[in-house]
Each structure stands twice: as C-alpha cells, then as structure tokens.
Length: 402
Image (tube, rainbow, N blue to C red):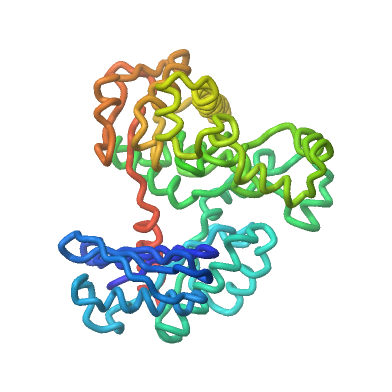
C-alpha cells in the first residue's frame, strides 16, 4: 500500500508518499505561495538532488496537479502510474470535541471540519480545499482519511480543558482547551515506551515539542491529562512569534493604548511576539543565538524566558501526574538545540534529573538517544518526531478495514 500524506496550509501544501510495506518514503516535497505570484513546487529526485519548478498555482487543485506531476517525474522514480496511490491521509488541525481518533472522510466528516473552521480559521478551510482538490485530481474512488492534531488530547479531564469563564461560552461556542501537535506527542510518547521496553499504560511521560510552534504534553498511562496549547495554538509558553499565555488584561491594555482593533492585536500576539518580540532580532533561534553570543541582552533575555517557561510547565506536569518516568524532547529546537535542553534540565535537577552533558551535546541532527546519566531519577530522551508516519499508519489501518 502506498499512502500519500498531505498537510495543506492556506498558501502551502506539504506532501510525502510512503510505501507502507516497509514504511519507506518514496517522495516528498512542498508547494509554496499557492494563490499568489511566484508559486513553485520543490521536491527531491531519487539521487537526493533538489528539484524546484515555478508553476502557476492559483488554488489547491492546481497545487495537487503539481504534486501529481512530481510523483510521476521519472527523476523521482516514485510511481509510474497514479493508480499506485492507494489512499490519502490528511493532517487536520482542529477536530474539536467531535473526533478522538482518525476517521475516513465522508460528507458528514467534511461538514464537521467546516463547522469547526471558526476555531482554526487559517487551517481548517485550507484542509477542506486540500480534500476537495484531492478528490478532483485523484478521483472519488481513492479513500481519504482525516488525522486530527487535537484527537490525542481528547482524553484530558474537564478540570484540565475548561477555562474559568462563564460556562455558557463553552456550551455555545466550544470555548475550551483543545491542544495541538497531537500526532507528534502521540508518536514520541509511544516511541519512548518502546525504547524503555514498558507498556505505555505503565508510564508517566512529559513530551516537549519545541520548534517555531511549541507545546508540552503530560501523558499518564497512555492518555493525555494536560497540554499547554489552548483554544488555539497561541496558548502555552512563548514560541518563535507567539506570545504564549499571558494576563488577558495585557491584550486590552495594549490595544487601548495603541488604538488597535482585536484583529490587529491578534496579529501582534501571533506574529510579532515570542522570541521575535522580546529579542527584536528574529523568530529564528539560530539568529537569536548568534545575537546572544555577540552580547545582545534582549536576545539573552528571550532565551532565558523560554527556558524558564518550559521548565515551569514540565514541573507543573510532574505534579499533575504525581511523578514522571521520562521527558522527551522533539521537533526543530528540541532535536537540535543542546543548550536549550541543558538549560531546561538545570531547572529540573530538583526533581532528580541528571544530564549527561556529553550525550546531550552529541544529540543533534537526528542523533537520538538518552541524554541523562544512569542514576538520573527521570530519564530524558531525544526522539525525532515523525508526524507523517503517524498519519500514514492511521490511514493504512482505516483503509484496510474497508
């Protein structure tokens, strides 16, 4: 079975074709600037060389035409005919309270994804476009599966997912914590249990997905008991351009002083805050690190705030679960920033974490492994996440039951 994994954004479309016989990646690429001038598709040839083609992509249907052409490109050597694509798996950001597992896409599922668009206005409409475009390009007979970012977090208890605002807003609008990055947290928590050789049902794990967008999740006995992101991906700790959670009066105070609308204020919190807002340098951690090394105080402050906030959440989840067996770092910064891991673990020494600095410094660019000493009370591990594989596996499992 060959599964095409799709992650459709408002102006981009990432894809991977995975052969589920041995879970090998046959092709992968990205369509950029959909709907604007200068649109292009980039993908890799079989020899590892990069191919980039400028092509008109006014909408997602044209983007999928470009994806189709790339899959059939003899330089990629992925497939010789489109009929070899058995099924398509879609990453869907917001599944609300409706979906606690992946599902086959039908008219009812599409309606629910559309209904949830107000909770993910930049993502869910794009996913719908992606699904419709897939149907148009690949045909109605190719099954499509929805894999939700929010599904893994649906085991959270009410005390964790409810906000202390009038209950009617939950009843009327679904205002609650949903959490995101669910496929990543699900993948690395299962992988951690496998590495430890124990059933996940017997473990208390804290998974830290740290990238430009970041979240931390407490997984107790295989189920999520809390996570940092909230109603939207803005909640939790500071990120590349997102503020994370803050005193709500900060929003109204700044908006009033600056004469900003709610929409303008939302842009500030989502796109101008976090590492970028504090450092004044960049949202890219590499740039912030370079500035800190040159003595930039604000760059150093941005990092100190980030490390502190991550440690705060890890500590709170230790309490929430009544202990912790292992902490996992994953995603862009989690996998490739040894200083971040070291600084966070310094805070966690009071919980019995003993970092092996040599192992930590060597763990970069896919070099996975244990980061703590043998006598550390809590094991800390680096695991490279693979959200696409989760989507492909779910798609395979659902389609095989048809």
